[in-house]
Image (tube, rainbow, N blue to C red; front, side, top):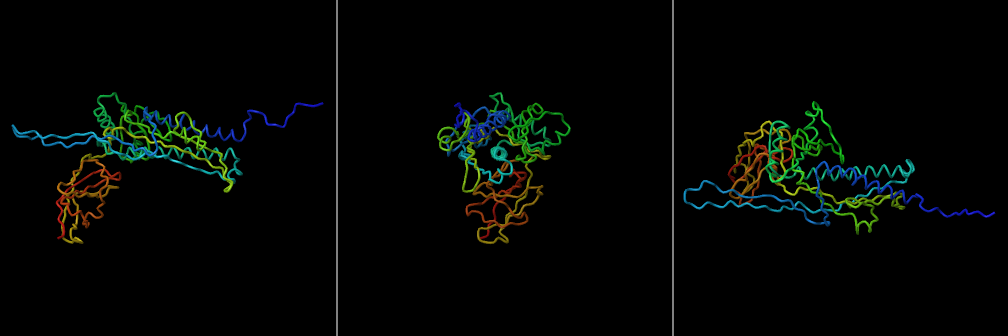
Length: 395
């Protein structure tokens, strides 16, 4: 008697292709719906802006020159010019990662397990890259500097500065700290920590805002800003990218993934991940750099310039005395035509030249240079001491 048995596959079965899609959806949801969401919440990021790849991004900085206020009676008061300028911080770029799971790995652990393990590791490394870029960025901003001898004092000063800088807004403050900097306090305090995006944070720490801990912030330093100052820029993974590379993403488009792609020439299954995420601050002036320092003031150094022993015409031999370098510190210098460069405590001295020997280093300044400033900077490039001199050049 005939039966209705058919050899055709049933509809709606869960097969190999569906399992690949399940892994992709799981990857995207973990990234955007869980870890990245919590990271944004911890930082207080509420603004997300989609950008085109290659778009130049800017932060705003206030600049100005204050003229002398000692004006004799009846004379014209000179103008002090102030301006808010845009400073380019680079272009937003599309990051692409590819990983391959070999036939040997699949044979050892099974296809699903091998792919799941390697996808999880890839997710972790992508998070680390985005997190690392962010902390490197905030540490590099040359904002307002405060110094104090204890962590609590630095946090309080940073909080106070931000209340002034954003006095027209009800601001929430976020501090970024190396775990080693806060370890002594945590050892004796009863507090609750949270985790997100591979980092640990403490909400309302000492009533002074959220503290985010990362080893990528230099020990002894605190970077603080208003949560309202933070913005997430991203290149959307939806649209043409998704269709061109068969990417799975969600409505946010923060990240896209395509997995389960066989490379038969190499006997491996490949995964492609794309993302273009960058956290920035809107106002660079709204970042406070705190330094835990028992003597939070710029120390003096005595700089000497002589033509004696100079190598060539126009050269000068520079020596420095009166200050002993601390651990991780080094000497740097900068020359100028008419006025010696002015340095303030904690200023990040980007682009200065290393002075190799404080007891006498031959330098070759520009022909127009007549002044030199030498500064001692810590491991992050922030000024701890400085001194200036007239350049004495070899004829």
